[in-house]
Amino acid sequence: MTFHAGTALHGQAHVATFQGDLTTAIALCERALVEAEAREDPVIGLRILLARARLESGDLDAALAGARAAAEVVDPQHYPQLANRIDTLLGDVLRQRGDPAGAEACFRRSLERSEVLEPSVVTTQKLNIGAALQDQGRYEEGRALLRQAAEKLARDGRGHMEAVAC
Image 1 (spheres, rainbow, N blue to C red):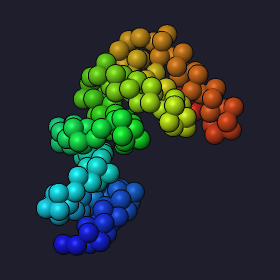
Image 2 (image 1 turned 120 degrees about the horizontal axis):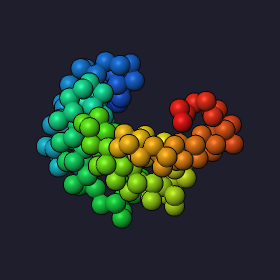
Image 3 (image 1 turned 120 degrees about the vertical axis):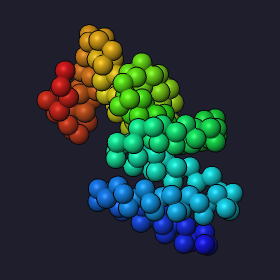
Image 4 (image 1 turned 90 degrees about the horizontal axis):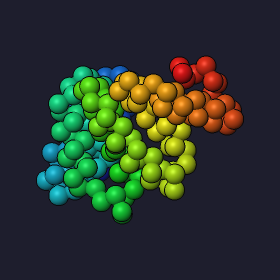
């Protein structure tokens, strides 16, 4: 398969994911990944998409393995945005697996990078951390972060305080 055919499969997998057809998305990602690996192309975005689709389909073990595999090949120093996406994915997987402390650590790593590189992600990470803290029974700390995020969304006109359950 050519590079362009692999890219087309990757694009089709995105469409299937957005349409909620996770079985098709996973199959397309797997096909594209086999082809990419034959070209020795790490295609991190594809690995992230595949792990996210597996998470959404409920295959938490495969989602965790995929997210960790993506993390192994990304240098956060050189690719901080990809590292942020992976940390968010890992946090989401760990939270779903019942590891809110591990999820919190992932979300905090992303938050630290986001404050410098991607200010728009800061609010999302505060929401994620707040939820992970509440999952750990750290309600006051969690509510404080959720409240900060909700206030920022309201100031930016992107949401309302009621959008976040504090």
